[in-house]
Amino acid sequence: MPMSLPYFSPSDLLPEPLPTLEQVLSCENFLAPPKAYLHKRMSIVRIGKFVAKYGKDVRSVEGETMLFVKLSTTVPVPEVYAIYKFGDDDEMTMIITEFVEGISLGSCLEFMSVEEVNDVQKQLTAQMDKLRCIPAPSYYGALGRRPLLDPYTAEEFGPFDKFTDFNKVWFDIFFPHNDTKRFTDIKKFFTISFECITSAKGHTHPVFTHGDLHEQNVIVRPCGTPVIIDYESAGFYPVYHEKLVLQSNNCPLDFLREEFPDECEMGIDARNAWNKAEREREFDDLTSLDY
Image (cartoon, rainbow, N blue to C red):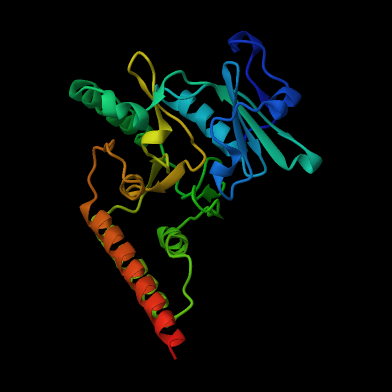
């Protein structure tokens, strides 16, 4: 069940007084320019020892998931100090967490030694082992049987009781248009093929999944401990899903112990087929203009 809001951490656990809503909204110390969030209506600012993430497209389940991970595992996760609604009709959500001191993995890889990189990869693999061992429910969805979130389209989907339903909707998101028979056939072929392969391999059961793993979503503390951040897309996905995300994000390090070569290969084949069809459509459009 979703937790009751508002949530505030006990005052004795705060590193300093919690910033007020007015202080957060007036803060211009953006961790990235607001336009960097593309279509997402949100802002992320650093204010003192805190990070505040707020807006219409911020979901309370992100903060709740971090609290859940902290209670369920020993995996380092940003401390969550507040989750609450605000604005007209409470249409906006505020999540205040600790500011994790350190540097993103993507920024520090180039000057880390081979030994340091191997140590970080080993720690992240152990963290992922623990996350993936969290007891999973029977559904595919976010914590509390709520919708999952695609991090790049901001589209919510699910929850689902059946893998076939998850697979179909995921391919609808993966392939966002089907305006001709060419695209419809590609989507249908790979949706069915992917379902057959994963079912035959026994890779359809849900496990806890971060959902957007890449080098910018890992902060390496000065002590060398990596901390995974940004749990907005986390939830219970098919067991292979995290691997596909790492592949899609071109992450330079692999944090998963399991290998899913068939699913990864089919994911690449599907994307290549789709891209080829798009190029062919562009060529057809240009050819038609010549006449």
